[in-house]
Length: 290
Image 1: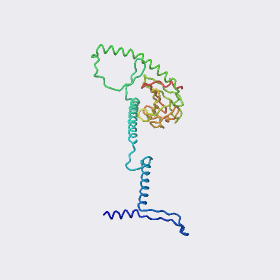
Image 2 (image 1 turned 60 degrees about the vertical axis):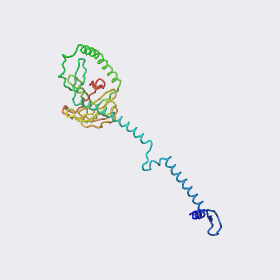
Image 3 (image 1 turned 45 degrees about the vertical axis):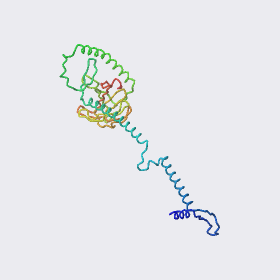
Image 4 (image 1 turned 30 degrees about the horizontal axis):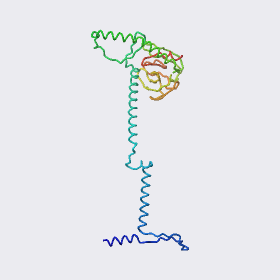
């Protein structure tokens, strides 16, 4: 066995000469003295260097992302960040949907409108309060109720002045070129104004905002609702065609619909415009000049 190993080792160390000659003149150009061991060591070294370069190239360059089964160390962090943003956007969308559903209830007449002693209209959800026994209210509750009601008198007037101050600084564009045929009248539950213009006249947004409603109802036909700043919402009813989708951003003067005669409550081509501030109707003619 030892003799065989010595023979193999001797063969590995046997010297050979590699000669490169000119094929025509037979002139010797290069001569190398090699052994099998030298050749093995050289090619092994080259192989190790190539493997090391390949590993370094993959680890320190973006090519590693194309290797099957490789997981980027930052991928989990990005996924968690995207999940958090998605949850936040979902909460915002749910809040907006609840707000839009509330506006739709107001528009479709699914709320009670009550005129108080000061000429203001408040909105409350319909409910059954027939089981409340006012005789069981304690004197302390009565005193607290009177104190809160007295405070509310001054708050109502202050809110009116703040609302007028906020809205009076805004520029309101005309929703329709024409003239007013019916004015704002809370007593008749006419919470807007009626406008008549030319045939197929364009209906325009009165302020910058976002379309929150694009719907049809039996009474008011095709209706467009726009959410503006300062908790202000405008509604445009009885249109023949609606030109904007929900979620579209509009600026004052943008065409949003075409005047029409849709809905059971319409008696001719006209635009019914309503303006709601803090969920209470206000007279559009206070801010729009006709």
